[in-house]
Image 1: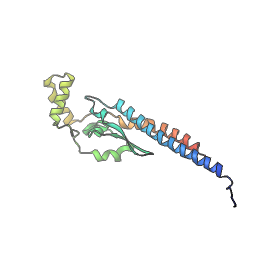
Image 2: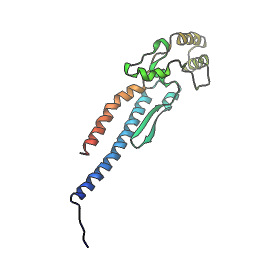
Image 3: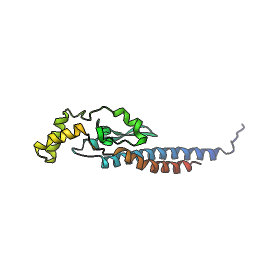
Image 4: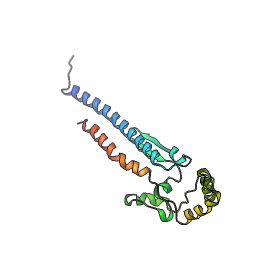
Length: 171
């Protein structure tokens, strides 16, 4: 009976094992990066009752795809501001355009007046002051409170560098 051995097979098997292990590490780095972005966004998010912060999460799509989600329906209005107060970085204009026309008071079950009145109550602001606050918000808007994209922009190059180093180890 004849047998044969392919020259270089042992080295190829070691290389394939190393690639497999490194790919697993790449997936772990991507997950870690998404979690870092979410944690930084939670810290930076404006917080009154904490709903916005609580709704920032990471969703796993597959081993190499993770989404960082700000699940509050008013997230974009907090990120970019409203009405005359809107400030959208040039690179996010197209993305932000999908939120034009929203009123930012969705999901709470409260009207804008009721939401502002409740906010004043929680903050200890005199009940007679809620109407001027309401009128200013309805006429001028709310200032932007960027929380999501600053976290993303901070961690994106850090994550890319870590992934680059892992991939370089493959060669």
